[in-house]
Amino acid sequence: MSGNQSKVDDKLRRLVREEVEAAIRPLRKQIAELKKELAGPEAGKPEKQGKAVSGQKSTAVFEAEDIARLRKKWKLKRDVFGEFFGVSGEEIRSWERGGNKPAPRSLELLAHIRGMSRKERVALLESIAAEKPAENL
Image (cartoon, rainbow, N blue to C red; front, top):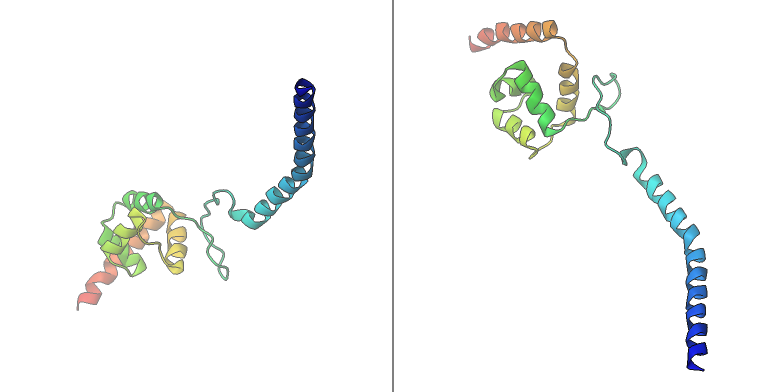
């Protein structure tokens, strides 16, 4: 009779397991939907955007490598690049290494200069160079 008893026990376990799985399945779906809802648009990696529309908060995303790449593209030292944002070269270094994140205003400026053409960059650098001697007087 123990053989029959083990078969009954196995069948009972299988039926209980199926019942529990059937009860849990809709709950798992509901949990997955709630997680998606909580995550919202931040669930995936946000897309990088160039210029922010004036009057709106900047939604530009910059990673440390992006800032370093932009500075090197402009062929500027950290101190000079920092003058655009009113920060020191050490702060730029910290941004590039991911230690600190730029302030929202700095992010807006980064988004603006990232979208500039080469001619616009040269004109901006020349205007800054022209202002520098006037400051030293």
